[in-house]
Length: 163
Image (cartoon, rainbow, N blue to C red):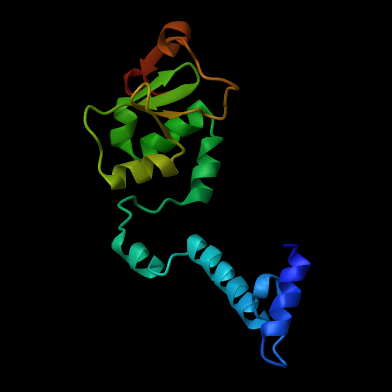
């Protein structure tokens, strides 16, 4: 049976004044299906319990001042070390200069307040080397497959005599 034959048959069997859609569905049923499809796709984007989900999650990360972070990412090595010395002397004491970059390494995981300060200073976490790194305005195109300490040398900033 062709589609138009089914439609004609449904038209003949329905009550007068009720318009039938393809395959015997009423126009109201068709509209209802479309609305349900729209609701389903809307629910997928935002589930009905989205408010509950968002209120149950607690973001333990401290809020970062992203404008300050972006500005600090472009500082050169000397300006970053001066900033560390004035604002965070404890970080300056353990800061290691590797080439033009500055690395800060801890033996244990740090609390969110420390990571927030490091992030605002422009540092990022390098999971491979397990250290906080600051590119000091030089961002390479690709990752180093070698040990930068061997290639460029390194020293601790606190060990250098102030100028």
